[in-house]
Amino acid sequence: MDSGDLAWMMISTALVVFMVPGLALFYGGMDRSKNVLNMITMNMYCIGIVPLLWVALSWTLGNSGDGSGFWGGDLIGNWDQIGLKGLSGDAETLVFVAFLMTFASITPALISGAVADRMKFAAWTVFVPVWVLLVYTPVTYWVYNGWHEEMGALDFAGGTAIHINAAAASLALVLVLGRRKGWPGEAHPPHNLPLVMLGTGILWFGWFGFNAGSAGAANGQAVQALLNTFVAAAAGMIGWLAIERIRDGHATSLGAASGVVAALVAITPAAGFVGGMASIAFGLIAGVGCYFLISLKARFGYDDALDVVGVHGGGGIIGGLLLGFFADSSAIPGADFQDGVLFGGGALLVDQVVAMGSVVIFSFGVTTIIARVIDATIGLRVSAEAEDSGLDQSEHIERAYNFGDMNLDRA
Image (tube, rainbow, N blue to C red; front, side, top):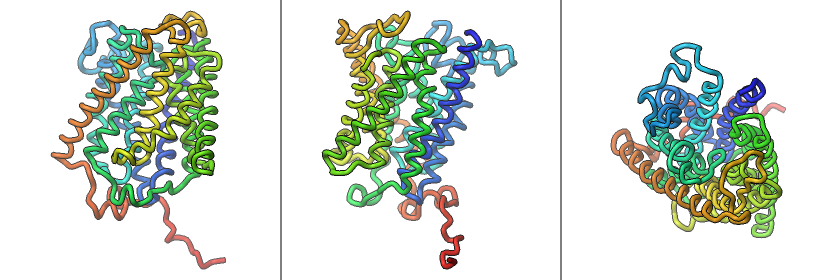
């Protein structure tokens, strides 16, 4: 890597790190006021525990550089390679260790939105590292170093490895955890929409590092990914607002934010593999499609509190399927990948379905086992009394808003 490529990868790493507090604000604003600190802490915990696990174990397992398979060169952290034994590790390897570590950190954070208001923080602290080791690490190996890559399936920046993976795990976890008290009859509206909008802006900003950084260099593919990310998110916002206005009679700030995130998820697997006006199609279809997909939770009775399954799972699947149609190797200088159906290919669409299906089955199955083991030991769910009082107080002895300290009688 030259100095420009290295600088871009360092910037991209910082951008993705910034997405974690952005996600915390996005989810925190959507949650109820008595649980907002719990939600933020669940997210921030991921950026604490996952990097430690990543450098000690998961990097070596999931990114075998010597081609020896899932177990890599060493079972327990390749200390010389990642530079923890000294500072002699080469810069290119170190920057990719750091960059991919941010992806590993934000993936379990996505799951936190599904289990809002009712999961023990102690159970979360156990679930995250176990899930990263047993689910995220093998899946990311399949996608980028294993049989998905050998088959020819595409996932530029994590549509399958991150979003579909987290959504499948979210569905498994909420089925074991159970519904919130009063759901679906009792409304659980967002308590702070300005926080949601702020979080959306931070996520959108960070997503340029997420997608364009996945080119691995400051090159033409990175520029194409950056432009696709920008345009798709804009189209997603417009798509969601339009269908919301047509169906419900109102366009909402929450709808605008949701459309942006749904489109960002959808363009993620395709950002460096499509050109032209394809990103508009990704954004519009994801914005409209995910609007309808979030209604499935009421129909089928699973309490996905903040719509992780509908937005991240639905958006990831929409993006992966559209990639099977729109992948265009002629749009990317020096590219070598399968073209989609619209550009003369046909096998890619089948490969995409197989790859996404395998991750859904694996992630859902293993997460169910993890959740049941935790539930049978330390328990997954807080008590009914703790749920009523709010997890900020019961789990953290804190409150987000100390209105009692304000002198409301003073003019």
